[in-house]
Picture 1: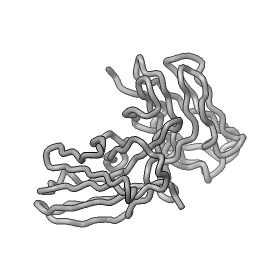
Picture 2: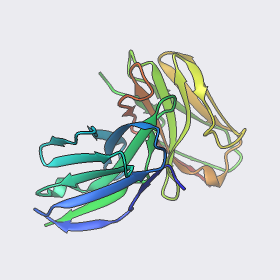
Picture 3: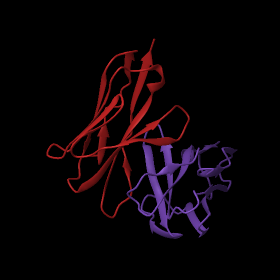
Picture 4: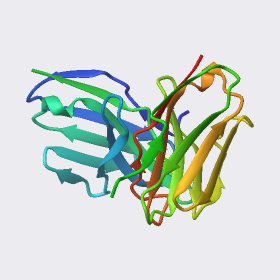
Length: 109
Length: 114
């Protein structure tokens, strides 16, 4: 079983839609959690960190459920510019970041 | 800051040739990471350095791959001899103070081995 698993998609949604991505991780010792965004033929960039209490950044909301070892990303009012691949990232003490394979989002007008 | 710099951006070579990829991390960052990304396997960590010292090279696929960091501002990833299955995008990333902090990626090197 891969340490970080994501539904690869693609998710195809119209502008203005709300879309949610899920991610599960296998190691209960994981300590830090992030979402990175990768545009087509570009490098990954940090979108947001994920905190136990959940956190929001504009139209983006991230949630963590440690008991279920589950992370989510909610995007409200989708824009064309949100089209990208979203990478779920976890790590545990003594290791570097572990990236999921990503979920592809395509927002259309 | 210029960000992480990688060269070359694109490389096309023939099987059996030596390939050298280069990376300049963000100034002041203590950690440097080399990744490989393919459609099939996603983003895989190959090796990472802390203060120029290799910490974890368990992701290096085989002896054909080697990485060095002779100083804080330069690292190389070498493949010798290259094979078609090495075709991928190779990213270098750096982070400040910890292997658990935000990583800043370079633009990547697209390698095609014929």
